[in-house]
Amino acid sequence: MSMLDDTQAYLSDAFDALGFTGLQKRLFQTPSREVKVELVIERDNGELAHFIGFRVQHDNSRGPYKGGLRYHPHVDLGEVNSLASLMTWKTAVIDVPFGGAKGGIQCDPATLSLREQERLTRRFVDAIHEVIGPYTDIPAPDVNTNGQHMAWFFDQYSRLNGHSPGVVTGKPVDLFGSAGREAATGRGVMFAVLEALRHDGEDIRGKKVAVQGYGNVGSWAARLLAAQGAQIVAVSDVRGGVQSPEGLDLAAVDAQVKATGSVVGTPGTDAITNEALLVMACDILIPAALGEVITADNAPHLRCRYIAEGANGPTTYAANQILNARGVTTLPDIFANAGGVTVSWFEWVQNIQQFQWTEAEVNSRLEDKMRAGFQALVATAGRHRCGLREAAFILALERVAAATRKRGFL
Ligand code: NAD
Image 1 (spheres, rainbow, N blue to C red):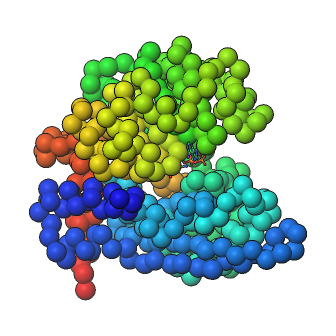
Image 2: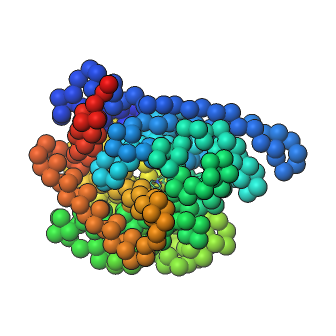
Image 3: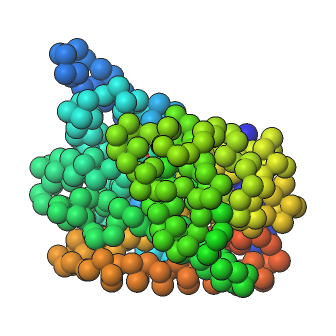
């Protein structure tokens, strides 16, 4: 099964729980628009290079389309479709006034200079600017894109359409970005974990946490959970991982990343592979890299009690069934990593009001949204006697269906 099949299978269970049939199912499974564009740029050496970019707009019944831009060799229409659909359900679960979209460029940014990435980003804006906009579709960073890419995106769109800071979120703080946006997804993961533990009458202090993917989401989740008293026993990135049973010194890990670009080889740690990290004994596992890493093969061997999905789509449908049967509590991606889109909403609100909030205000409003989201999930899970992932899809579908119905179809 592909990631798109997994998303459709989760959705299908929610359709069954709500008694949706035929047309209703097709409506929520089918994206509103798929855009595929050809991008040609000049390399620094004068040669031409050719890329394909995608933007999929899944649903906008609750507000403008919203979703990140991913630069990765595996980006294809199926993956972007799945991620766009997840955004529709995520914005509904966390109750922000956006729909769902996703985009990306099939490329390996490691082989592109910064200037080449800038040219590619600007060509992408040229190719899709007619179908996006501050009240239409608002991109944001995702894997291998960051505030600098968003700055180029904002600049190119504004050259074509006039000053439009609200066209994209995740911008640098000194260029219409929001205080707190960089850490927001990891901070949201932390609030999700704290809320789940509080619900179960447990304390974060001394809990062992393993994090796959020490990028934006994973590193912030790790740092913020460590600050709450958790022990981060392992972290990894694409090159491998490091572990320490007594808890890693994250300042040393950060220094290693700064010096070498990877966590691998952090002094005072032992090596661990990405595969071994997923099945190591810990209280909380945070997959925060790519999709489909927890599968039917490794799910029977996981030794955690909670999974907090920082990444999008890290758990396959078959693995989810196994984990449910084993009693592992999963904080699903469409809730656990919704801190990013929540603070994206705060950034957009500040942009269109031409106003600025303090970081404390942003973080406190984010905490309120994550706590309310968790309580809504628990209530839905209670009503439908199901796990938190199933509850998340049911809750999201109820909200999107209600908006669709009330807007009318004709
Ligand atoms: P990032 O590029 O900052 O970090 C990704 C990390 O994963 C890096 O450390 C990278 O080395 C590692 N990685 C990549 N391939 C790997 C592999 N095969 N095995 C192990 N590690 C690997 O990206 P990010 O923004 O932190 O996003 C991570 C995940 O979180 C993605 O699934 C993304 O869709 C999701 N997400 C991100 C945000 C956000 O605000 N950035 C919001 C919601 C969800």
